[in-house]
Image (cartoon, rainbow, N blue to C red):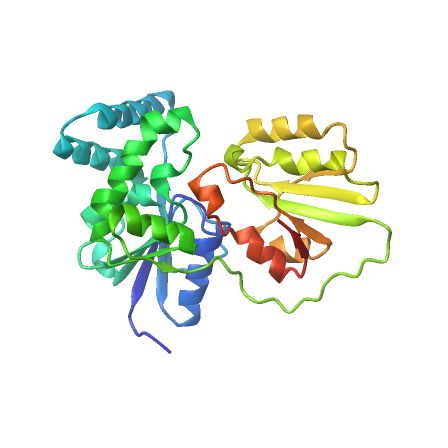
Length: 317
């Protein structure tokens, strides 16, 4: 099927070259001959897109403090219209390339809810599809700073702005139900499945069992639990972590410290998006002990679950 002259914009606060959901959507649209542009962090120049427009986040102390102050004012303000205005101001803090002409797009796919208000402001006649990967009002529900500065902000984004979207997708039935129950929003579940790769399981002819875990080092996921199981495993078992090291370096160092007594645990550099499944295929077991620390961890259906399957691994989960 070919959609002549249709153009889609993918908007995300990430590098879509390495972020699974936007990466797969871009490639899917390319396969059905739809022209795609991205509004995102800088890509690796490896995507089938026509135009790349940049989003910048200023990380200076001034802008961090300004962002936190606005979120605090939003939390304490009793005036709903003022809360909405502050939400729009927070969106404006993302420096969007103003060379972009929103008149060009038939559809805009938003991968991060924080940029939804600013996209709605500029979108012209484009339809809006929002991809919700978590239940954002409870995104880090055990974190004090999140509950003070972020929770009301994320709640308002969902309560006021999501209803302006033409369609919503999310990653699991559990998260979809929360959007329905809290905000009466209907969403379609699109699981985070990778493309099919014709690959066979690796044969294990040794007396070792190689386990692997890859992904973002998020404290809510309690990755240390996968290290602690080595107290109960025999000498056959090995574990390699491939953690995204720009995400939370302090937590990675904490995990390395815990793993010091166990010589068969390694921390390796993350691999490129296209190399994830071939790399995982070299192992025997995909390991992911995800403690249900909150709503999002309890209802998670993450990329790595499907990537372990595609890599033809046994899964311990």
